[in-house]
Length: 263
Image (cartoon, rainbow, N blue to C red; front, side):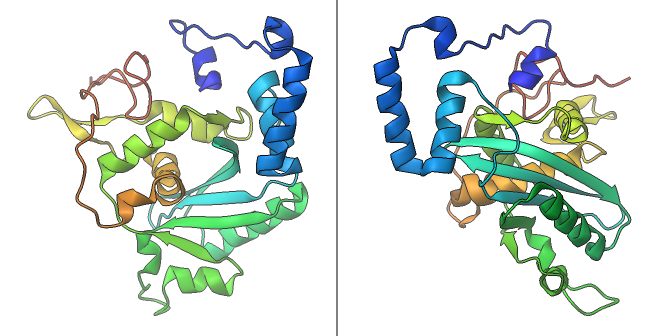
């Protein structure tokens, strides 16, 4: 959210560490660091402490497993986010998108990034349709990915508005690498509701376009890892999704100026 705020002329943002404010004595900081390391382990605990008190968001964090979150495309784009979880914070450390490539291409991309960055993968979160069989091979994509060394976690189908709300909640504690995730961040900014020109109204659902693939991939992670209750078949709870406005992305706060109006 900080990277988004930096580009918004009407938002106020400020980064202040404990050294800048001086409101927490060093003795207290030592106690806090010991407690956090004790709770999360030395690697994640130290990273979490640096983030919490010194606004350190170095990406990626060595030793922290990397999740991947996918949106699978056949005739359109496939999008993949690379995510680290440190306490309740989420680091979107990389993003990849391509179109028209077979699954083994994406397996190679994951392997190359793993070797180059010395990552250790955690779970690979994919949408429910990864279980569908392909006509030309009679194999499902989940079976193909397994044969390529990737063990997918299929996230059950979910209500679109529930997944949008799950991403909103997650973004409040998410850091996005502005360089590695430039394309993905651009997609998040341009995600918008669908406009019905004949009725001259905005629908309550996001538009499926070039920006939606990255957003759907992030929603796969948010509903699978962050909020699995959405996909457990429970009776849908009433939630405040906010008013439908052309002036913002479904993911961004109501006062954001992102989004485009119809011609």
